[in-house]
Picture 1 (cartoon, one colour):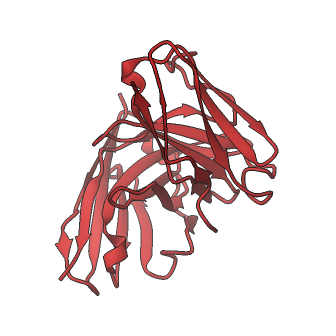
Picture 2 (cartoon, rainbow over the protein chains, first blue to last red):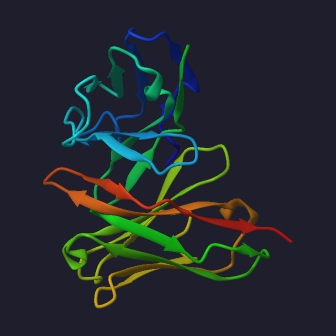
Length: 110
Length: 121
């Protein structure tokens, strides 16, 4: 399977809201498969920030929210802060432990 | 505190073999599935393999199914990835990650810092 499709980069100013999209097919994002999102700062390990399309793990800011419509999942970050500058990866779970990642989106805070 | 520490990454020639290790602490290791995920330079993440808590069930991505073997030693709280017939496109940072599985999906809720594997002559 091909990786899920993400825009290479997005940018926003502090305080603004941005949305990162993740597109797939009916067999991954658009099916009954759930999507998660990971934040990765340069040189660091990924961090889970959204799971099961919309849920936030304990300790993750409520400025991060997830949604899904059809074959596209989205991550919205509101009240953008400098510390949000990072790479964001979407991931669709396809059953039997198999998961498919997107190519990642670089968020630049202007 | 959950800690995952990978080791074993190295510069290896094409066709060579390598075994990665991941030492886990801070949680009941045998109760959770574990995974390996890699990231090629400048690229996105790629899930490679997962193993059940007891070690009896293994799952692989098609890209590595015939060359990589995942295993675990619950008595030592360690996860392993045996890699053979390595190729240049296996060059990547390899992450060990703890799985959290609900009724509908599995995600990786904790990650190690990764170990670098470079395949080059």
